[in-house]
Length: 304
Image (cartoon, rainbow, N blue to C red; front, side):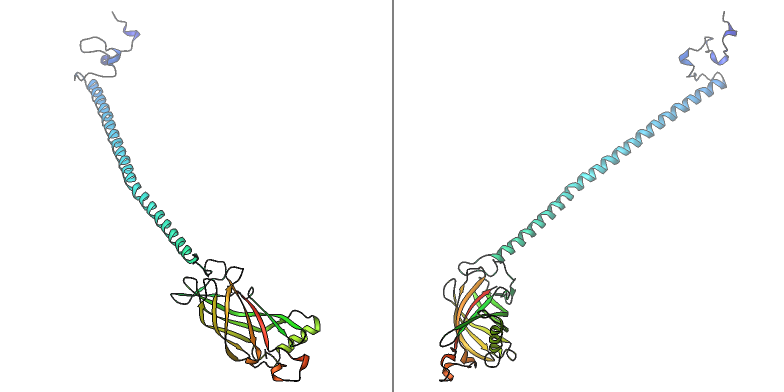
């Protein structure tokens, strides 16, 4: 027989057939409807099991939704990526084409024509477009120069310099010289072969009314009227020169100088044609060794 005192068992610990429940049966009451207590156990277990299943189903459904959402987002991102790449690629292509166009324009501007020196391919002041076919390049007044020489009929000569006030040379798109104008600052007249008081005295005399009347006529000008290309490097210039308020035609030849973007020429000027007749031999037969040649020479370098 069983020793009831050694095991605290109640009615619910027994199965219907009078045998005690096994250990595996204690957590799972039978739905036999024998007693209210055992039925509650059954209902409680069913509810827990159902709740567990429902929770598992709910969690699984949520996981499916999350997975679908993630996959959908990835699909959207993947579908957008080619578009973004295409936009970036198109932008890079556009930028590259723009740079190529700018480079082509620069090369076209700087392209050297055959023969005459191109006004755009060499370093210097930037030209100003004055028409569809013409570009005006200002001369470099600091680097350009005028060297003059005057001499007596008998004896010594004197040398000096003048500076440009302004000037420009006009070229075609092909780089051919087509015209230009120059202005000389007469107040810049300097004597180089004398020093001290002798130099100052001669400079003052040349600037006075006996010669160039600099205060009244501060500028001497030259305007090119016709330019004829002699060959690919030289030009014959027909121009109007104005000195001391008098304008006269003059013809000379411009040739390329050693430096790039430059021309040079040599001129011989009859000063008496411009009203500068002081001590000119033709105006007095009694000057002797004080007579001054009516011609003076200019060596001109134009850098643009």
